[in-house]
Image 1: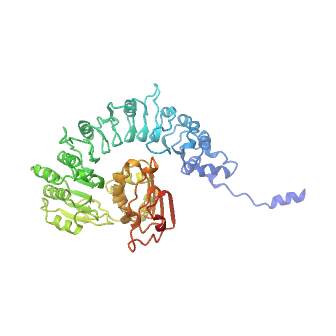
Image 2: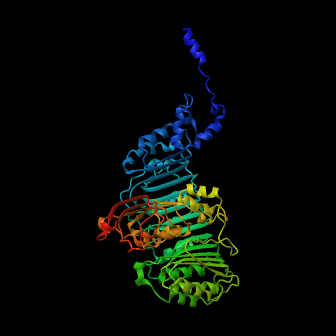
Image 3: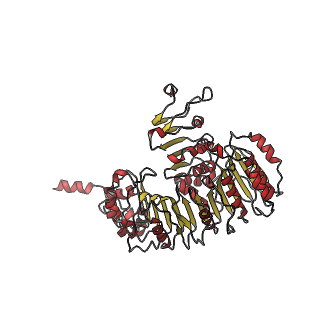
Length: 595
């Protein structure tokens, strides 16, 4: 007995618990900043910490698609309310089990909710969301992707605290447009609204987006779902993309609904219009920055470009991204820009325009006439940046010589050709490219999702184009993204791009060629392309520019037809490639030898 007591006396004293000495509110703040896996692991620290995290308020819960529904439900049951943020990616096999934890959300008072059902884009049968979502009255941010939203219960009175609403690849019930209109109107604090590919079956009646405090609006759809824009007095930025099948008068009403915006991004590809609009009933008096996706060789697109320019007297920055589709050569109309330019006899057009960026041009006669027109009319112009494709109709050198001869209305106007690898940016006063951000800012951008990277442009005027010069970005486009938007991001991103991951729906195969040809100059290091084909015989042909990506270390291709590589010595392989993954790939004749 004396021996046992002697051994106990020789045991070292237990180390003090420094965390226990901290005030409880500081400990709670530390735990709330941890990843959910690390939060749960704190239970193993000591007996006192076994259930310590159960009482921490404001947890940030983020679950990957591999997390079972039972594990998510277990964590939610133990977490204290309110939960600050819940982000879940749900695979198809966990969809049924998701009901377990979806019903827990109202009593946990979740404030930020992001749910993404990982199903194929565009499928008609989407998983139905649990109606208990309408009982989460504490929500300030709601993001839903690839699901069917049910009808709200009669007792639903809106989300009184909601400030951000993002709906992507969503199917609404019949007459769901009016229900969505009512939900938006019943959210008086809503500031940021994004409606991407919202589908309403068998519904063509008009419904309106109205909000007294709405500042940011994005609308993108693959068919006319009846969406119109009502009174938005606080609107600052609007993005309108791809509304096929809409009538001319309805498009005019949509554009007239964003007249309060200071920044407008609009896709003018209106090949389905017989009579494009020639004007509007109101002017865009607040518009300062305009970004257009256009084809200056096609009548509908060009007509709309000139209509918007005529009705934007205070425009200061203009960016036109030319999208020339090789499959639409029959729609090219030579001389249309010259006709529109000659019709603008007034010298009052573009009186305050300072900076212009025109990129992706093929130096066609219409595009050259557009440059000539802007230079001759913009009396306050300071900087005109032009970026041309390497395989244009006219050589780049000849185009530069021709542009240098054009008459300029502004004595301060400078014409700057942008070569490959440069990223133009407007800094005011005609200054050059912005300084490279410090290393700390580059690390922060690398950690962000591409959507959050772009949103840094809204922080301040100095941050507006800061991300353009960040090297080594990770571009992961998993949600439905228009090809024009992908091309725009690639053109603005500084080389090298560390990784590019993209899922391409079938309707975007043709227009994907535009940004695939940008990959060599962006020096992409890791490339993952997934072509979402519906039938095996619909596989698209991969562009041969893939063989010019010499910097590739990882290449993953899914569901496409592999092109034959160029003959030696132009193609000598991928010298830095360490990983190659080819799935459901078709090779050309004798392709196995070349592979």
